[in-house]
Length: 196
Image (cartoon, helix red, strand yellow):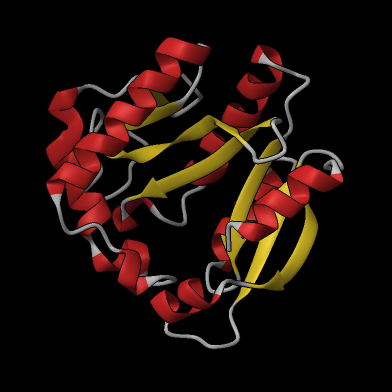
């Protein structure tokens, strides 16, 4: 739990609310073709988060508003989105904590993503301090990059996104940013770059 957020492990009963956020075109304005249109995708994502909790003791959470901050339309207990870190194996046979977050537009601009991301980075370091925390962000989503930087990550690589990613974003000159809490081994960085 953070100052304003209740962080829960995802459960199957969260699928509908999480799908509504993932299906909202506004949450995919930076990558329109990747918008989630099948509730089965959301169920699989929450199952992946659950598996991460079981295997690693840490993964992404479902976020709920913990207190009434006087925000119009946001009542305590309301599901605001998902976010946290997930442990992934790179092609270099090294693990990284991948930081991510997707919040409903009604709560944007109130610092919830930064509050979550900062806490997630702290928990990742406390759980496995030897594992880097990274975030992969597109230039079409500058707010996400700012959140990662506020959480302590620094830009480690910037270059062209993969052709298929650029096509999904509808921008030929799309840039990929890779941020991390430390310098990355060359093989890890190469693997992350290869992911587009």
